[in-house]
Image (cartoon, rainbow, N blue to C red; front, side, top):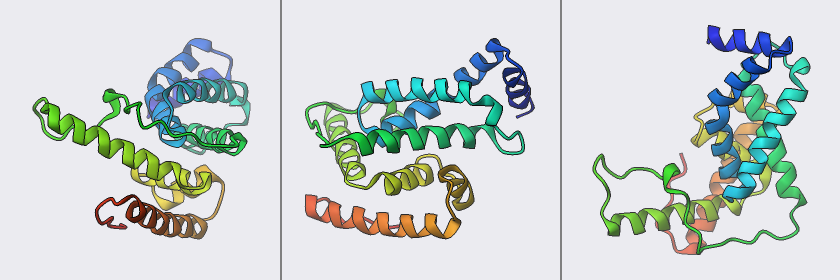
Length: 191
């Protein structure tokens, strides 16, 4: 954390090497967020690059009193919401499996081919369910359940109130349960 604050301070002073350290530290979380929000690897890569470009050009506006990760993920989620809103139609490709490097391991051993197929199908279903949500609801779900952010951190990231975050998550869980039921997916437990 101290090292991160040093990098942020140096980057704000114009040190490009320090900003490169920040990019290295956050490229995976930013890509994961953009991928979960956009559901497409190429779009996610482009979005992640745009996020870091925006962060670099807006470093002067960063308030060191807050966590850099929250600020960066805020830029990422808002950019993804903008991209989603610009889409006229969302095309879901059920032929393209999710990248295996982001898949969940079912066990510590290499999964069997059958387990890999089931896992890939589950990931496709999860992504399809996420894609069914409005951008603001999707952002709240991803930040809560993939990044394990608190309601306060989500509110800060999304520039809204804690009660709005709770409301979005409640509604999103209901929408996900309904969409899962419509897809014939087993019971969904809303946490």
